[in-house]
Image 1 (tube, rainbow, N blue to C red):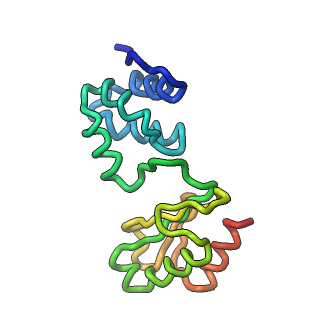
Image 2: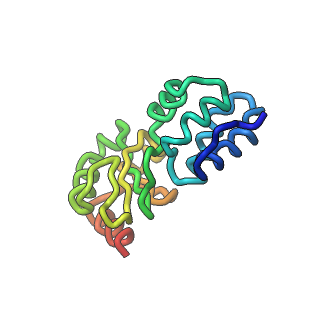
Amino acid sequence: MVVQGAGTEIEAQVASIVDGMRGMEGPLLPILHEVQEEFGYVPQEALPVIAKGLNLSRAEVYGVVSFYHDYRKQPAGRHVLKVCQAESCQSMGSDDVAARLKQALGIDFHQTTPDGRVTLEPVYCLGLCACSPAAMLDGEVIGRIDADKVDEIVAEVRA
């Protein structure tokens, strides 16, 4: 079954992804991951195409996208910096690390710098509790973050 009504280029690409993955068991999350991999985020116009292709309501698809923190509603920056906010990291100073990063980058969580270089996101456990506080930059984990490491990270993403 081919999804009909895919008018824009984005809708056509999403329809192709849905068509290729709809036969999977529990296809919604894999489809959303594939859409985000393709575009760098889950475009708003993708939601009705996914809903129609899986016989779901738009609200059901939106609910999943908005529930999971890893799905973006807009494109991310060139670098994605995730700062752990779980209990272990908080007890070891991740709130101070986050505040220092926010100040140095001039953005808050869920924002991207105006030059498009960095998106800052909270994450709730990177599995590095023994190396708290922790962060992840472009998929690479960084443990035991202190003020010097914050300065190194900021210098790296601005380069």
